[in-house]
Length: 121
Ligand SMILES: [Zn+2]
Image (tube, rainbow, N blue to C red; front, side):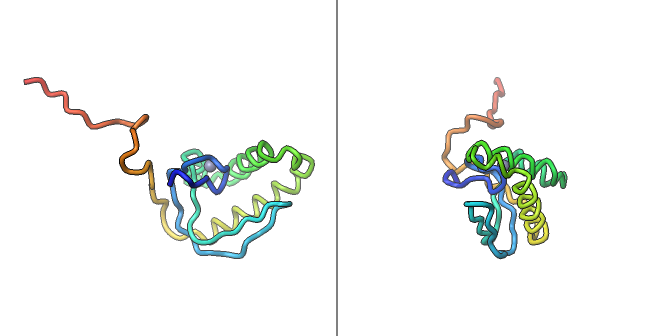
């Protein structure tokens, strides 16, 4: 999953996958967003989705989009509307709970608790 990006904010290696029905792709300016099947989400976006905090989710997508494409800042009023619409479609098409895909097996665990038995005899 390390080659994936969060479908909401483009963060690398998203840890969550939301099952969703495929729906018609939409175009945001020069970007084409195809939606086929599930959506990947990073921890932060997952938190916003789980909390149904759609406004913060749209704002987060907008700021990362503009970070990557500064020339789009001039149309951000339009963009936020498109993102809200796109996310509304996601919420309408999602089916089931998020699946935690986590880190690939065998990856070095840099974060997270590791099971270590420290029983002294
Ligand atoms: Zn994200």
